[in-house]
Length: 364
View (cartoon, rainbow, N blue to C red):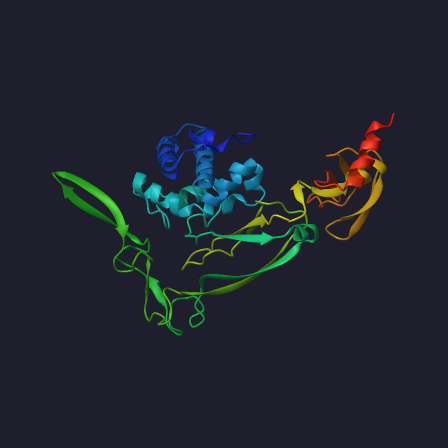
């Protein structure tokens, strides 16, 4: 499949579909194209395609990026591995339900299937939640760029045990009740029908591991703490843009940390309106200055520029001050500042002013 199809088209859903509807549709397609069930030559490619679509659309952050920017918005920020790691928990649940696989570490579940198809390990590893932070900046920050300092409240490695969950000098072992999978199969007789389901192992609480002497301060190596994160916003960034910081999301025991997604919000400016890299502002002049012409000072984001008003300038004229807008994030070009001329008409005139205007109006 040379060109990527629209993810919604791949799954046969539309943009208004709920997460449950998308999950239900993926389950149907996964059952149809799973390589262990479908031996047709193109089954694996179909399975990869629908799984990639589901990995993106089942993750709220990635889905929002995709809805805004299409494939470029996702591919430009994530590798294939990152796309699938973020949805690992969703896949595990689905494959355990469909095939009874041990999705966490092996068997016919998510981990082994994707290692075979995509040629890598780690897809089956649990992954922490992504974090979303909204960052508010000014137009001046858009012009110059800005360094952001964040103190994130999240789970971090326990300082007492260095994140192992074990008291220093002790160790942990594989849970024998679940074989390290964290789940056990339970059979129930429901009116003569035998139902089998998976549930977290009671002995290891779903972790797959037992601690000989657990750390007293933490829960399996993690504690609530604060992580300081520093990064630079580049000049020219736009309202609604995202930055992804790999590995700075929520941390979980025996898994990979999620990512931090920073959504940029540019605060409204009291003087300027933005359109891409161009800025717009108003300049108020008297009707005499509009008629006779003048020179005014226009405040820009950096300094003050002189703007010549030609005689006979009409109300609502738009004049341009070149290269006084915002920088383009993809080139060295800078936008322009467009000045909207507002001609002020006096509401009250003296008798002498009225007389002069009458005299002017009656001139041939």
